[in-house]
Image 1 (tube, rainbow, N blue to C red):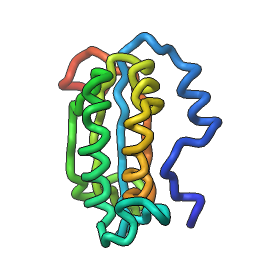
Image 2 (cartoon, rainbow, N blue to C red):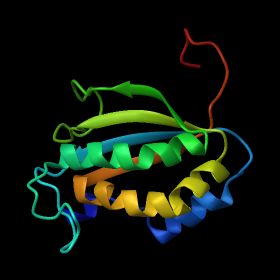
Image 3 (cartoon, rainbow, N blue to C red):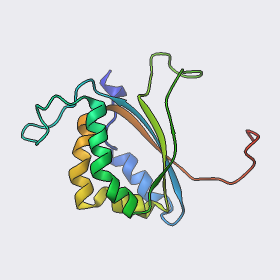
Image 4 (cartoon, rainbow, N blue to C red):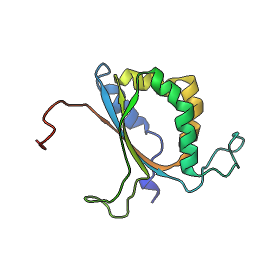
Length: 146
C-alpha cells in the first residue's frame, strides 16, 4: 500500500506546480491522514517524546504559522470528514482545509523559508499520507454547480 502514501511532493509534481502562473491567487486543498504515533528522525528534540501524529501536526501549525502568515496565507475553510459519499470507502481523512495564498510565489517563499524548513519536520513526522491540490479560485454563482 506504500504507493498510496504521500507526504512530500515528488520532483515531477513540484516542477508542474512551479510551471503554473505565479502571480495569481491560489487555494491549496489539504487532506491529511495522521500517523498513530509521530515518527521523528533520530536525534530530533521531539523524538521519543510519545507525540501522536495529531500532536506533531499541531506543533507544525504552531511553528510554521508565523511564516504562513508572513507570506499572506490564511485558512479559508476547514472541515471534519464525516462520510465518504463518492470515493474509496476505506479512505478517511483526519483533517481537511483550504489555505489561501496571494500567489504561488508566496507559497514558494514559505516552503523555502529557513524557519519553515525547520518546522516542516513536524509535518513529516505527523503525516502518514496526504494530498495537496492547487486550485485557481473562481468567482461565480454559489447556488449552482455549473
